[in-house]
Length: 59
Image 1 (cartoon, rainbow, N blue to C red):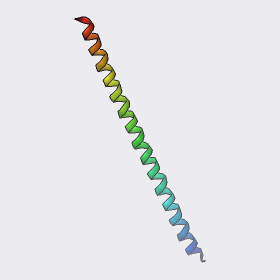
Image 2 (image 1 turned 90 degrees about the horizontal axis):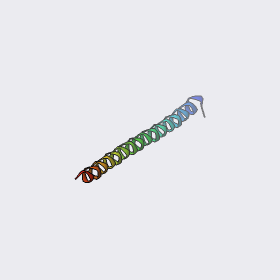
Image 3 (image 1 turned 90 degrees about the vertical axis):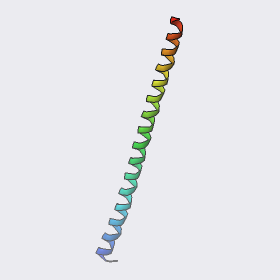
């Protein structure tokens, strides 16, 4: 195997590895964004429920 062939194989391997790392990072970012949105939705629902409860106690 020549040095050029070895360099080509290593470059291909490195490129595939970096693509995999980028895909994992993107996936983790999407999951973190989803968790953030889910928490925000739960917070809004809790505030709405507390407001409804407080309004019912005023009447």
